[in-house]
Length: 356
Image 1: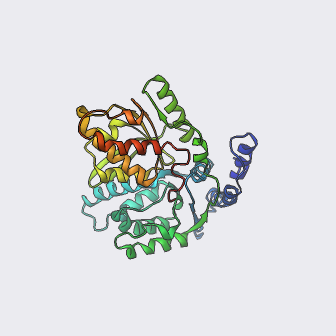
Image 2: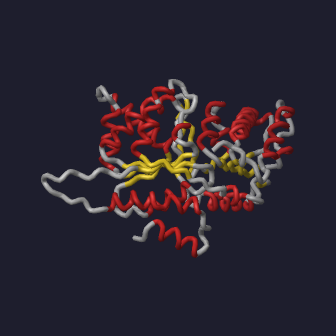
């Protein structure tokens, strides 16, 4: 199989990608890891297994191509056991597995869970590493220490440099050793491209489709295909003991129906978690709002507030233009601010000043 550099050059030549020096600069790191993992292991009674290569912590702004490069890397791993997963989803799996391990009476639930992961993969490829939950912060150091000790190589993308992970979090001093572990076992590389390719793809594009009909559904499908490039998988966010499910998620882009988020008994904490987990949210089939669906309308207002404050890019299909969505019943005055925000979020440069 060709190297990542060969594949990257071919995609530039056929017009799929455009040359980006910042992206090109990280390709040798991916090829370094790939070559080490694909190298045949010389076996012998007294031969010591070779040290696994250092992993890669690739950080940079939104839309710079980190996830695209990660996909390309994983696609080149041939028969090396590897797994590509969103970091938040992985940590949810770890919590579930630890809960099951505790039921067996083990003293240390992390040990069997880490061993199980290490037995199934040689490479873990994470998208969007970020730590916002104290329960994640308190276990991630010991978990990764055991994974590294078992020879698992970790490659991850993030919007934050390691020293900014779990910034201002509760008991952060207990988390700092994990940051040092990242620096020791992974090459930290900033993808400092000046170009936000995701924003460029949306530049001048329509992001609010009304009314909801066959044309708007086709348009939404087209936007999803362009941004995500695949069917996507569900992302389950665990918030205060309950699950918030985003049915389609890939590359920090999520797609939901209005009912998925506003027809369920969710609140501000849930919507803040959604806003923290995604950079682009697509919402299908926003209905007209009023006294008949007042609770759904209130949740929608709260959701838009969370997305607005986090500067998440919003793309949606709705029964009417923002000013015409909520015309009667209690809350019409309050909805004027939401309508104004929906208008503002349609601007071409919306979200460009968001923190990466």
